[in-house]
Image (cartoon, rainbow, N blue to C red; front, side):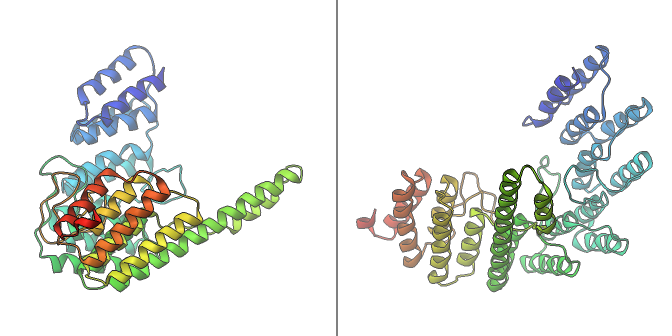
Length: 399
């Protein structure tokens, strides 16, 4: 049935290299079997065209679907817009935006979630990729004038500022080569504009800003943002406890859901929070900023306290990332922005950034002992990194 074919087409988009010929063959077979494609089918097929870097063919297929009477939803255009924008193809991006609005009458993507995503965000990305940060900022300010900005607008502006590549084919997007201090200034400007608009950043954007501030000598701003993230998490946790109590009260009162509705109405819309990985990133930022080991130790202690309060064991990836960070390796999974022109890591970690201080080695050793006693066997990668750092420092007795 339709669901079967949609699933098979979706698999074609999820392969390492999108298998467009097979996806098109599945679509033809579906049509030949008398199964009419739906808006979901079209959107799924567009995912393949986007990942296969075949935007013109995808756009033509969209026209065919519309002419065949399929009610195509806005999210079908998103993969094509993303690829065109990441290519810096401003003209094609504008054509796709115009086509989407002409067919659907909308300039905002349909979403099952309570969040707003303007299609014009891809105009910001396309112009930034083609002509640099100033062009992206101009496009964002134009969107601002008509009230068409949202968190994704600033995420794209920030990507342009620091030269972040999306998951694209080789050569699809190269940073403009601006000096580090220029990119840092651009990132700060994007952050200030976002604050002016009252838009709360995502967790991942905060993680990347930790690295920006560390590289800009503004580690205190990273600490302030991390405190705000922890406060937001506490609000969210309190709200969830209140909602759970409301459900329990409704269950004991014969199914009266009024109290649940009241709890939902009162719940804050928290889009920001923190995770265990947030600790890794703030610790990495402090190390990059040459902060005193005591500050790093305070964050490690806070992480241990939080894990104990929530009766959680530290996940292996987090423990490994923390240990490697403390001994001078940068985990590939860490989200901190690294400036300095280093090549991307060929393995799970970059070469050591600098030998760890005695204080950091002490913190790493204590953390390793805690993980071993609290969670059983420590992560092998983190253990190897710690032992190597201790041996390099001549602390053979501690290995």
